[in-house]
Image 1: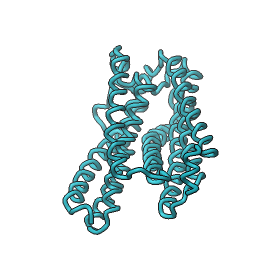
Image 2: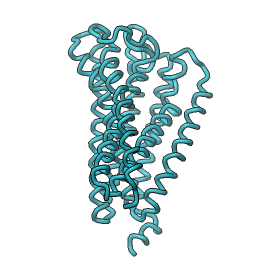
Image 3: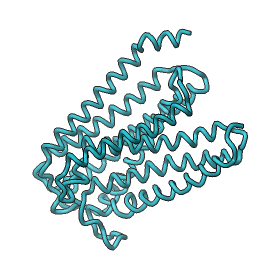
Image 4: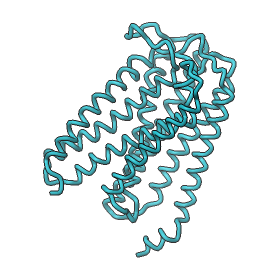
Amino acid sequence: MKYSSTPRLINTIIFALLSIGFGFLAIYFGCLVNPFLWNITGSPIDNMPTSGSVALYEMFGAIGFAGLIISCFGLVTSVKSLLKSSDDELVVKSFLSYIALGYMLVAVFLLNAAWLYRLTTSNFGYNGIGFVIVVYILAVIILLIATNVPLVKILGEEEDGNKTMSLITGTLAAANLGLALAFFGPWIRNLAAGAYSNSDLVNLKYLMFFLMPLVAALIAFLAKLGYGKAIKTGQTLKKNAYLFEGALAIDAIAMIIAGVFSYLWREKKISFMTSVGGSAAKNSNWLEFTVMSIIVGSLIIIGAIVLVILTVKPPKAKLQKQGK
């Protein structure tokens, strides 16, 4: 037994606290605030947000749901590790949950640096966009170091990379499911509210931003299951990589669709980027958002294509390792 009861107990306490924290974000924004941002009537919150944007609070809700999923997994494995004191693998899984949370936050900060930077700048009357982008990039670098160094120490040098990819695909699945859940409540609430100004277009946006992450989450989860089986068998299966790359491509397509929506309905007051909803929701920066959505989404698609090519024709060094 490598790990004593102390780190097992500490992990349990930390993940319990993380579950409570992310759970609060999920319930408050995902269940109490976001469903009523567009149609405030019937809101259970007396003081609904009056600044920021729908997208900002959707992001908070998505972070809450995704963090809750990962933290609950870490909590369950930590409790199991206490009950099975001889099983060090459970402790390792709980440690990897910290890294999964780090990767999730890396994605959040990276997207805010390259794509969603106006959520926390001009929407609050702050024009120092360049400074904010630099801060996000620094946060990404710090988090990457803080997550990858422990990852290498925990897993060592993997020949097949199955454990690392299981972690990445699991994180991708949780992040997408969190995003889907964040948009599900508002979509259902708006349908129940009946007809309102541009309700067909607004409901279509909510539906698309719910369905596409949900599909990506399911595909990423299948990839995680595949990598989990590969860990046990010691095999390297290309289909798992294809599933991961497919999930990435779907996320990228969703980003491009968000930009297309911004272009098509630029004259209508239905932007999620600029307001908490209602009559003021018209995006004066629609062209910028459209262009950045297409650029960032296209870069992710190109990256997914490159990964597909590397999957079909792995580097010679990797082939030699597989042949040994």
